[in-house]
Image: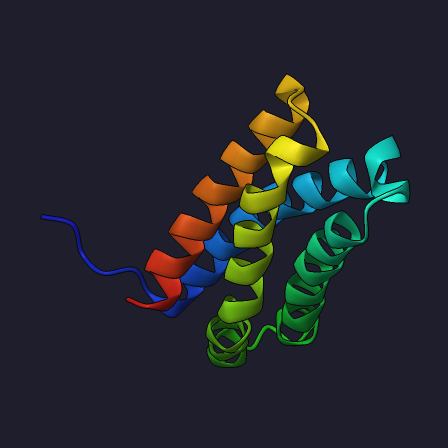
Length: 117
């Protein structure tokens, strides 16, 4: 039987997931398509906002504040993922965009599970 994760373990796993979100954000930000699409820019900006909000508690090693902020900003993260899911087929059908969406959805799904535990 699996034991519940400690706050420190949750934060460590969330940091790993944030690294995946960071890579998706970086890919989107530097794509040629981002230059032409306001909604795509909104997606990567909201991903950045989520990660930026976690920075302070992370630097301070404040697990409780980190988890509180991760939950507080979850709606923005989920919204960015949902918008990307909606617009991705219009933006590009290239495998890179499809895989970015798959990666983001997986990361967000696990972030939600951890912060709602």
